[in-house]
Length: 417
Image (cartoon, rainbow, N blue to C red):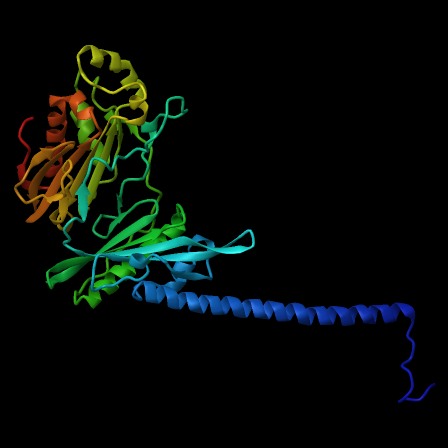
């Protein structure tokens, strides 16, 4: 046996030497890989810390930064929008909003895409809602030859109530929560926060996150405004709102009045035959109903309209300018700030006890449980002419049924055309 120290190491065989060499290489590789992993983890931690700071600063510390970062599968790198009036929310100048962008790698480059938006209102607010016929419910620019009818579905879902409606409303991408003041503070009766997924349609879980973010923001904004509130309860589920119109005679919710209007009528030729409504809970602040005439049905009556001297549009107009009606019901603070968009003029407020018609808009007012209510309807270009006196009949049916159902008094309708 050789000496126990000094001299060359014993040769343990070519195979064992190779194994030892591989183990050494693996060990070194592990150290290098572990170092990179540790660096990547540190960098991610640093990004998240910077993002939290950016979210709090941009959105006035009204929302949970980690919840915002968790949207759209999770984003470590967020920053405020570079658009000045959206980069920072100022609670002293409401309404105001913040918009956050998220980093995304595309073709080896970092691009910043819109991720999340938060808007806060103090109510009542003039111009909170503007009844404008230019804001049609259907996409524009469709041409004949498309497989589906443009009137089959709306561009954006109608706002659906959160639970019994007292908490607010939601659409596919936005949840709006209202925190009502126990007593008005500096003329403000409530605060509303709207949280929006700017990256596309969120899933059910993400909509619940948006609802929680909006609720927290509304309550915090109210507290900072000196307004004591009881946090509104949110529903357990927020299913995706519908966009597809169905048969008008089967209309429910906010379109149930129209199903009743059609019942027993013999002549429905020019009247809408499709409807899309939303649930109408007792405490909802807004309601809407979309009615439309199927384009194939419109094709069938076009020649008869022309023979009767009614200007109903050219061939392409029948496919790019569908015939529709849309109702808008606003109650309480939402009604107090509602305006109407007249033709070629500035929006004007709708005062209590006022009613009228302006271009393609009809509106009425009432009082519901001591608070104002505005009931409006817009119509597509030329469709008001096609309907003629029936338009007034449809509007009167809508306004009367809605006011009765909500326990309103003092309903004022526009005079006849």
